[in-house]
Image (cartoon, rainbow, N blue to C red; front, top):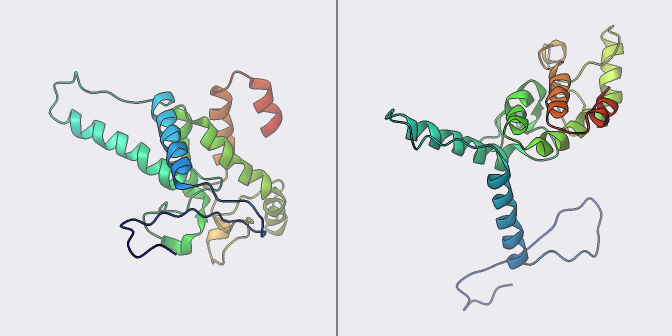
Length: 193
């Protein structure tokens, strides 16, 4: 509990499925880790610079590109595909909408942040058995990726969602982007074949 005389209140916490004795990192360490993480993000990723452009709309376009990179990093760069609207608004009950995953993730590879896309690709591996069961249930061979799903890859109830197909090629396209962004091509081929 903060002292009533204090003008600021700092705290750290951690979230875990299991009770553990891990001490949360203090505020100063968290702040420094955050600073370094953002520095790495901006210094290692792609960028746009329209400072030499004479078109009066250039500044606004550059501002929007940079803002978009910032917003997608804070809202869409976790280990799971983001909800349909990221974290801005909790639409569709906060469920992942895999048809939207392409819009939320493809740019990470194109801006030299393939590590974010790689982290999210694990979700497809984790739910592979569910996706295979969906395909069998619907009379298909192979895999049917869900449309609106929870963290375990279970389809949310819908009279049409489970039959939509536009999210099916996403993992293939993501794997292609990862292939293009790596020096170890064989590792990507082996991992996603």
